[in-house]
Image (cartoon, rainbow, N blue to C red):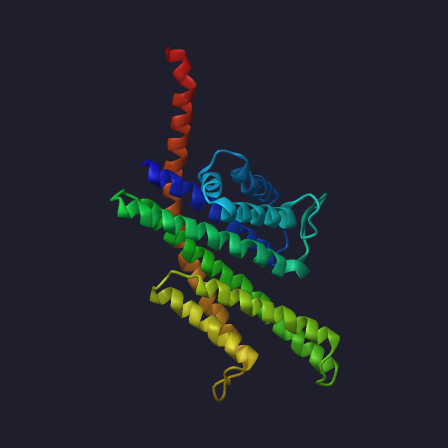
Length: 285
């Protein structure tokens, strides 16, 4: 693997760990503690060691400093010892599912900024006729998987909040209450995050936009920007959206593993070979 792809491999690997944090925005019976510990250590280790991400930060002045602060805040909020979102206990990892929005607000901007670094690096390498084809392919696979997982988690949270909002209004005989306003504010935040994910996308393929359009349409139905088609209820619209997104996620996850797994295996083998060579160098003198 050439040096340019080695750099891209570290950045794509970092993105994947950040993206995997979104699993905590899905309600499950249990979460793998070992995976949690790996992410907790690795996300912050990139800032504390001599890595391409650290180099990018150091070479970008004030913007780099702001990005480092953003990563550290994200890590402290979600993974820190004082986190109220994720907490290790005797029975495993406990997740406060009332704080999904905080997870989204940490993951999305960090992932998008690293994506911008990757795209800038690829553009610069191409302008110098350097070979980054394998790294670019891996970055695209990661982006498709990331946006699919965002759509999946955000849409599930949107649907839950929409149902909670309607229940709160029904309990108040249709009146707006403090509870319904609070839920409405969360709905607005989820919609903002959906728009942020869509607006940052560099994907143009029809399969991606098929899933994105289904989610966008559901948002319009729920916010009253568009009327439901004659004879279609909201439940049917929700099922169509979620089925479409789930199908997309299954496809992009398969693509991700087919493309990125061997790319990362080559990266790890090269890093190990370099470390072995460095360790042997003094003995050769």
